[in-house]
Amino acid sequence: ERRSAANHQTSMPTSHGIDHAEISLKTTSAEETHAVGARLGRLLRPGVLVALIGPLGAGKTCFVQGLAEGLGVEGAITSPTFVLMRLHRGEVALCHVDAYRLSDAEELLDLGFDDWLAESVVALEWADTVIEVLPRERIEVVIDYADHQGRILRLRGLGDGPARIIERMSDND
Image (cartoon, rainbow, N blue to C red; front, side):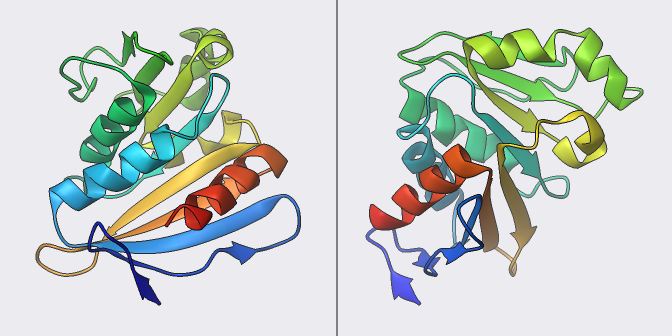
């Protein structure tokens, strides 16, 4: 393992063929989790789904705030739990979606998920609750508690494009 300038630990990407790459990072503060999101955001373009998975309070929204910074989005980024979706304009548009209150996965499609994905980067919190309707090509960000303050972030690129993004993220470390 190596230490990066942002004071979080990383591991080398694990390549599972051309269509899967994974890195794990340990962060010890909300600022570091935010910084990882910003690093990823700088590599993204419209059409990429970032599927966020993790328990309540793990840092999914904090990660999306960093993602927004990396995409050049300005303004407050808050969890869209009660409105389901918020569209943020910036250098690259960010569609921030929260699946927590959806009654079923089909509701995500009924709300226009495919249209959002065509025009923006989509950050989907609670993605594990609607996994059956998500595109195969995506970036999964699994956030788990490591200890009292720390988090383990596992970033997986599924599909050729997302896998290359995760590999580039590791190269930029």
